Length: 442
Ligand SMILES: Nc1nc2c(ncn2[C@@H]2O[C@H](COP(=O)(O)OP(=O)(O)OP(=O)(O)O)[C@@H](O)[C@H]2O)c(=O)[nH]1
Ligand SMILES: [Mg+2]
Image (tube, rainbow, N blue to C red; front, side, top):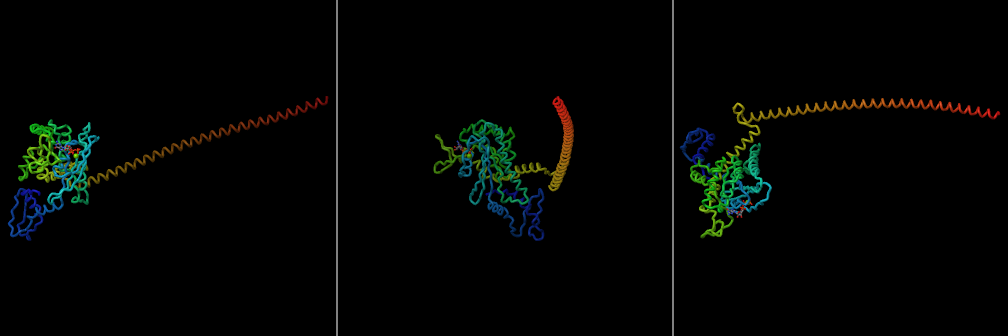
């Protein structure tokens, strides 16, 4: 069950309840909790009952169930699925990925788990094809996009007028387990680039996968090297919180064990009179839950038993808050104006709205202006073609008249020639008759 953060919770409850109380009706004295004031212990004449608030919260939370989302990033075959099976002591029946994918994809599966009375909706998201490409420059992009997509979905739900956040399946990534290849030589550039891109978006816990393949002395040097490289490259990894005294000591000890060197297995071996999850080799057995063999128990303790709620809380208050801030700024919302004076959401909205309307009006004017210009251009074009047509028509008319005149002239000429011909013909005929008459007389 949840741990209650005693004094902080009491303080919050007192603040939350203060406005609900009215002086005269109340048997207890009025609560005035100011900043830096210590909460007053009430002198009650009888039992009021708000000390049951924590129980009410627990019962409501248990009723609603919990959501936890894990993102496993690691090269193909590094033991991601086996570790998840080992952590939740079940078999998620995952399929191995091929090595030949052209790019990285993310595959998420949601499972409903129950332990005692507590229900957990667990989503495990796996990278598929991570580290398999020759050019790994863009390998981190699919992961960044996935995380942003989950934030965006939540933000869109939050921004709705009718929100249903209680029924909404929150798929934001609460923890990213980054599986490091047990090379003993430090981090690969892909590891550093990816973790650097993600550290402001998600809680990262780096883990050394298949830690049974590395010797004890090599392992401590490897851990130190990884931590140096993370520090030198400014990669912020998740730190278990130390502000709650009930877990401060264990958490600060565990922070010094990061990156956890883990071993996973789906096999069970009989050791003494117990059956344990283990990997068996010709020379011996590596027990997953044996703290002398690996850090699996430490990881499970930190991830599931002690800090699950902190990871959920940090995802909302730190990473989502940052995403939300950036997105709202992108949308043009701000808390202060150019003179650093506070502006309300409504003012920003009104300003944006009138800006938007002015932009729309300007666009409309521009389109109208463009339309008028186009119409004028078209009109001028039409007038020009009309003029051309008229000119063409006049020319054709002229040509036609000229042709007609020429034909008329030729006709007249022909007629004259015909008349002349006829005249000559009759002349000829007359002279021929005269000649014949004379010869007969002889
Ligand atoms: N030596 C060793 N082998 C392991 C460990 N964990 C898993 N394996 C083995 O590594 C192989 C791949 O394990 P998976 O859990 O399928 O790895 P994965 O990262 O989920 O693989 P993909 O999903 O295909 O990318 C299997 O043969 C496992 O038995 C480990 O801690 N140590
Ligand atoms: Mg797998």
